[in-house]
Image (cartoon, rainbow, N blue to C red; front, side, top):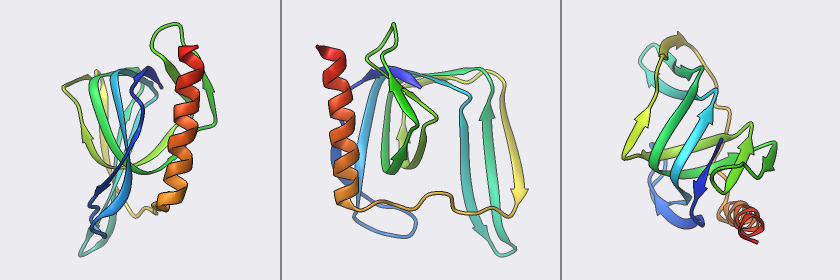
Length: 142
C-alpha cells in the first residue's frame, strides 16, 4: 500500500457492537493497494458468513478516508511517488469513504463460517499507532 497520506487523527465512531468507540482516521489523497483483500463477517440466523472481496491487480483510490480501530503492517518504505508505503497492511475498518476507486477484476465470494481476526485496540494503543504513522510521515517530509 502506498500513497499520499495526511496526518492521522483521533475520532470517535460507532461499530456494530459498540457506540462511541475510539477510532483513528486515516486519510489518503491517492492510494494504491496491491493484492487487496476485504473481509466482512456477517452474523446470520444460520451462523457466520464471511464475504471475501479480493483484487489481484492494483486497486486505486482517490480521497480515501478510513476510520479504524486496529492496524498492523510488517514494514514501511519510501515510495518513488506518494509519501508513505506500508507492506502487509491489515486494518479493522468501520467506516470507509472514497471519491472514486478503480477495482478491475474484483472478485466476490461468500463462505460459511469465519472467525474474527482483529479486535479493536484501546485508545492508548491507537495513539501509539498514530504516533508511529506521524513519525513515518515526518521522515518522508525531511
